[in-house]
Length: 209
Image (tube, rainbow, N blue to C red; front, top):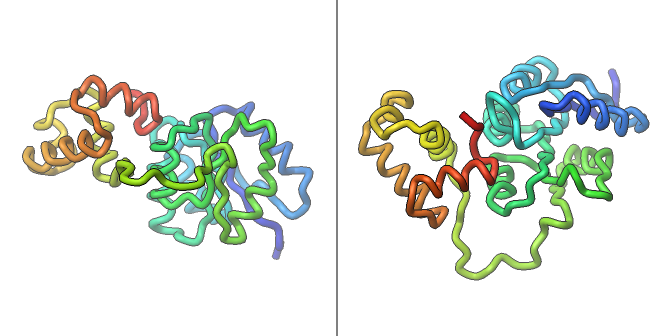
């Protein structure tokens, strides 16, 4: 039985996956056991391969990295998920960590040491890109982390669906959807649907319809 750390690479760009694989192939303690190009495939391969670490892109087709992370960790809570992203927005970092990711690093960081980050999350450590770390959370800062259900509702809002349509899709009452919509806007400090849609897309909280 191999004592190498098994790794699943998840990114919708084949060139990016190839680059990451090259970085990891040089390290004898790591073994890339599979690659996925979207969130749905990531969930399927996580179930099939049981990797110790999943290197997950935030922006994925079909299912976002955050959504895929939640699903995978429900069945495999010991899997270490390292989120990679081009985006440094505080909201997105919180969403990833709230979903259970053990690390969040920027793809475009000049000093990205992917092998080291993988080993750290495999060892149970938290890895946050130095560019994202803040010495102290601002007092009274608004908590913008959305729940899984709120993210689902937000996805439908961005798709242009009405509260009634969303209620039908998610098997909820229209009133419940209205409450979720109000909570989302309140938490993000946004008061218009158009602004909410722009914010959600810009911060990678949803898949583009």
